[in-house]
Amino acid sequence: MSPATGPFEFYHETMAALGRNGIILLGGDPPNPMTIGWGSIGEIWHMPVFTVLVRPTRYTFGLMENAKDFTVCVLPEGFKKHLAICGTKSGRNMDKIKVCGFTLEKSSLINTPYISQSVIHYECRIIHKHFLDPSALDPDINEKYYKTRDWHMVYYGEIMGTYINSEVAK
Ligand SMILES: Cc1cc2nc3c(=O)[nH]c(=O)nc-3n(C[C@H](O)[C@H](O)[C@H](O)COP(=O)(O)O)c2cc1C
Image (tube, rainbow, N blue to C red; front, side, top):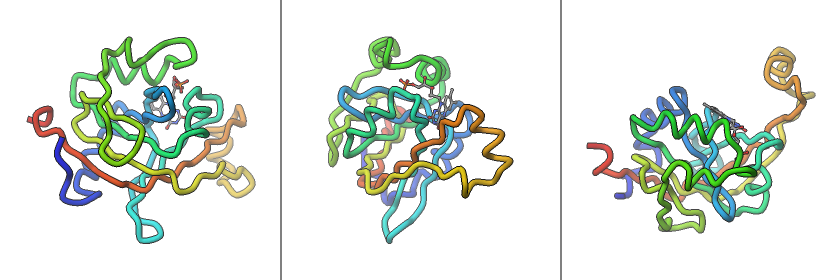
């Protein structure tokens, strides 16, 4: 893994993967991989920030609530099945790391490890979080996505490091 030249260097690749089959949010102890399809990368408070959304019904939610940091892992082509497992099965009932055959590597700047099979990954430090506020949400969005009233917790992670695995990217 090599550090990127800047936090946003792989913005387009990351957003494309997010909208395709998803990417992996890895948080908590022990770390549990969860597929995410929503998120954003941007600049807030003069910091590069990765924002991820987690519904409180997810096992990941409890882990994130006790975490200080998380990694976001972009898997290469050929990992569609793994993303489907991490996006439909819960870490409550299954060791998804083991089932998917992922290996974890120590991060450089934070406690949460990353998945070594990733092509790109981000090391993020949680600097803010809040639940979505249904009273301030567009009613159509509220109706469409929150029938079960499980409004997401939004976690803001300062991007401490962005990395590329050139071997996987080849
Ligand atoms: C493509 C895709 C994208 C997803 N995006 C999100 C997301 O952004 N936030 C979320 O809370 N759940 C999302 N999910 C659902 C979770 O990944 C799923 O409920 C998962 O089984 C939760 O795992 P856990 O219980 O181990 O945390 C997504 C699922 C898929 C398949």
